[in-house]
Length: 174
Image (tube, rainbow, N blue to C red):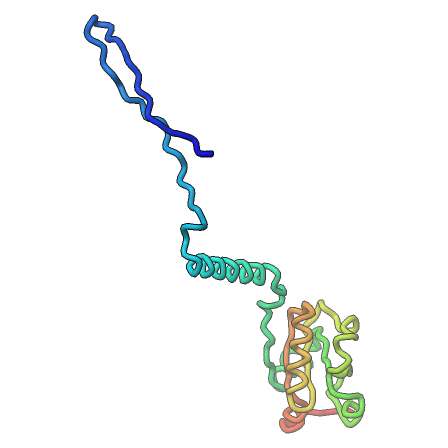
């Protein structure tokens, strides 16, 4: 059912006694309706794909883990000793090697939680102090640092491997 729109005309008599004249009064124009059958299906599909992509990206950004802005910082053995060990600044030193590797020698004050168990033992790692992570060569410590980041830790330092620690003449205990 289509509404009919038309222009109305009105007749006004002049108050000065002159002849009558007509004035056109405009009615509002009907709203323009875009009918889907008039749109190219390929263009419609493209527009829908773009809109869907924008929505998905927006949702992804809104629901992204808040830790995405956290940067895992690399720290050298010398920096660790100067900034944390020697001044006894509060921190948590995490050795993510296996218990067998840990028993062969580790850095003083280190706590051993293997990288394979870290996810299930996160409650043992404090959130309120910097966490310094190390392993044998640096690969597992990078994995552990990412696990901590994904779990919401915000102050994470990757010391790399104990091999570099030993190569620089730093002490280990058994």
